[in-house]
Length: 373
Image (cartoon, rainbow, N blue to C red):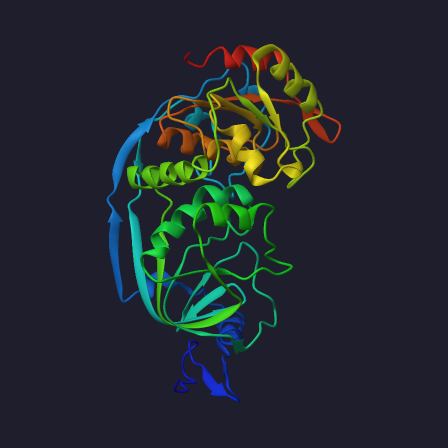
């Protein structure tokens, strides 16, 4: 590789390794010039539509009166629609979905979870790169395709519901690449098992030089994404024998970002006893048990969070998700998935109690009765 010290993408070969000051160049550029980096996709040599823009239905959610009075917070800085969730939950009628797009960028460096080329960069994590990034480049790649995302590297639910879908695009465009595990990016529980069942063979890298790199816009919940999600669910279901059943309650407990439902077991046991639900604790179950327990469920119930994706993955069209929402952290994430996959979405908002919140059991029953039979 030739040395070109005038560009952030410069790298030189030394003692059998590639060395790059790209990350340091960007740090100096931001601090001294007070100038933001361009998005890496803006310097693409080529871009194209994989799936077109389209309009999809956005029906109302199922919920009881007086729920909105309890909502005190929502993740407007992290999750679309970046506004109070009421308008989304009351139904937009229809929604314009972004196209799925690919971008080809040449001569790109990956250093500690960030991609660099000239004056452009792209973070693959939701946290800032280290103040003193590594400068050695482990590997040269002729053509790679990055499928991981900042939020997928932070939340298991986003990884399984979104990044694993984008993997199907990356596999067709080059070597599928994601961030190598570290203290900042640990492997999720069941991650390797899911990859095996989904025929995923990612290349995990800390740093690399890509002669060609493909990135994607895959956040539009269009029919192309729906078909990939259904295909992923069918792959999982092919590993288990199952029959239809009323539903599954997926426990969250104190895992992940704390959303402590103080009467979680009371609700789960009530639904098991009176509605025939199964109860799943993903922290104590292997993947075969998880998929077999969720497969065939008509309803998935639990605290809004990543653990619900175990059930949503294999939920058939016409089924439903009931999210138990903390009053201080209302999130719409699963509403967009159920709209895309022709399913129903409902919610109950809790009331604060101690360090957590409580959900009214009668309201759970009444909301479940709102779903179409």
